[in-house]
Length: 293
Image: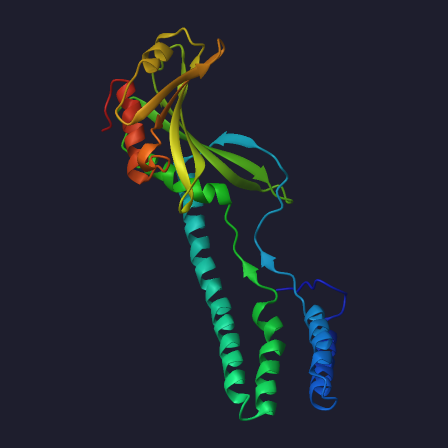
């Protein structure tokens, strides 16, 4: 792996030599001159010389928003990739935690040694300071699309429900492009449709918003019945639909009507867990007068 430094164009050997000289200067300031504060600029300069840019797989997004239907296999592949990235993040966090514990241990040892030997205490402090670039610079970070990472489990819950005959559930992903023109998935929706649709029905779209609760950001799934206009039988039927624990909100215009079916937000309902997401698709199917298989 090629190392990319934040400052200058020196090679690795030249940087190690320069950092070694600066560390030696710091030791001279501490021991020979008896001016430990003068060692701080030398140590800081050595850190700058050794400053390596972090490595990440985060793509350089181009700001595009292209929605496309995808296969269930594609969604499963992305889900597997996100799970693997989580495992990688956990593995990468281990060395960092050990490094922090190591520095804390050296600091504690320096405090214990100080009454006994000032020289030993200073040596322990220098060991901690000199090792900072090796422990923390050039960190590797694993990237997952933040929105997709939060909402994907909700959609997987809906996709796990076995549909009755005559219905199809199509995943849609919103793609951006990276600098190399490769697809970067960022958002997701699901479209539920009867195979034999009423003339005024476009489909039922399942979407997820991110709410901020007492314990941080949580997913909130809701369904939107999309119709052609607001005068057809499907819009009228769903506008009058009622289900316990759900709000039904009519909207749209004469070109495209909407009926939003969402979980009531009282008593913690702003967060839809896996069971809530499964119950939502069952509720929508009940609006069509059918039950899941």
